[in-house]
Image 1: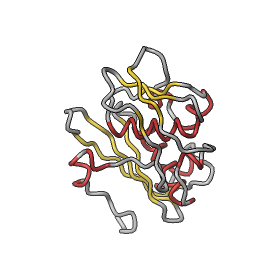
Image 2 (image 1 turned 90 degrees about the vertical axis):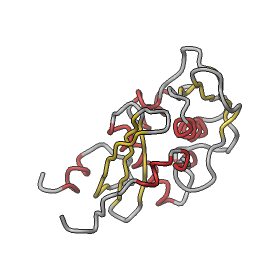
Image 3 (image 1 turned 90 degrees about the horizontal axis):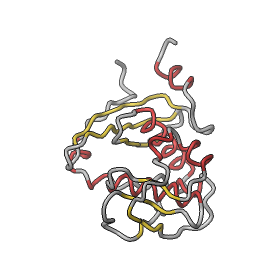
Image 4 (image 1 turned 120 degrees about the vertical axis):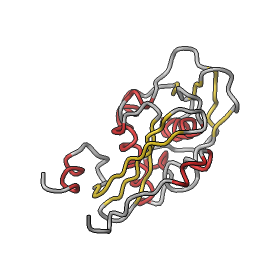
Length: 185
């Protein structure tokens, strides 16, 4: 492959998204854990952002691609994925059951599994927000599980376009210097 655009075109993607640029950044979060944060740019100029705390950049890139697709569509991601109604998602104490969306590998794998319980393995606010988006796309009866005692009883799926993760809960996120894909290297 001769350029970055061809590389990203060869990767599995949500059908409506053609990536031309991707930037992965490692970030030390408040808990001391490391997060990988990925920002993507589509051919038509949509930007999406994704993350992982399990250090699998492909999962974060998949999340970012779906975020870009929903932003381009002007829709909350849960609606783009087939969700019908926005409702608060129960957050429960983990029981050892459920599906960790980051271990599943992709949004498509989560949707295919149709879990009734999504696990936010670190109980991080970003993880809970992502699980709320996925749960809303899966429909009524889906809940989120966290280790330990939940800090909140319910999580709201977003109304805004994209996946709706509030990046401000991690102060270093705002300090990321994203590369400029429009500048020649």
